Length: 160
Image (cartoon, rainbow, N blue to C red; front, side):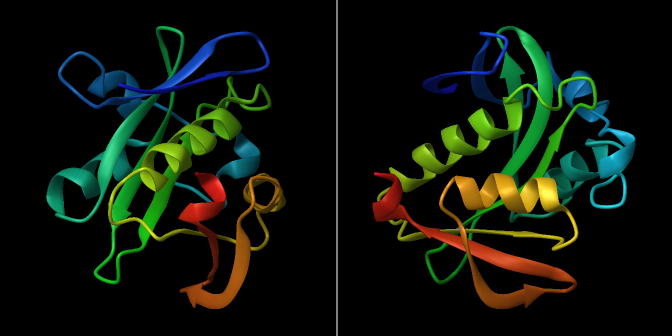
C-alpha cells in the first residue's frame, strides 16, 4: 500500500494499492462522469488490460478509506522518466479531491524511487479539469505531444 497520509474532501484516507484478486472487479468497473468520457475509456477495465497484456504499465487501485474510488497507472521509460497514466476516478467520486490526493500520493512515491529524475504524464488539452489539476500540482507542459495529448512534467526534486 502507498500511503502519504492524504485525505479527500470528505475526510477519507486516500491510498494506492495493488490490484489483486480481492479488488480487481471493483477497479474494472470504475466509470468516469459523462463529462470525462471524451477523454478516458468508459471503464477502467481497458487500463487493467493494458497492464496485464503489456510489460510497461503497472495498475494501482485508488481507495478512499476501504472503498475503491479509482484507478491510476505508472511506468518507467528507458530514459529514466517515470510516467503517470490511466487516471480514472469514478463519476460518483469526482469533485471530492480523490484524484488530487491520488496523483499527489503517486508522485511522492515515484519521486522516492532511486532512479527517478522526472515525472511525466499526458492529457488532452481540452480536458481543462485534468490540466488544472496537474498544473496545480506543479506539472508544466513540455511542448511535446503524445498523439493528440500534451506532455507535462515535474522534476522529482520538486516533489521530494
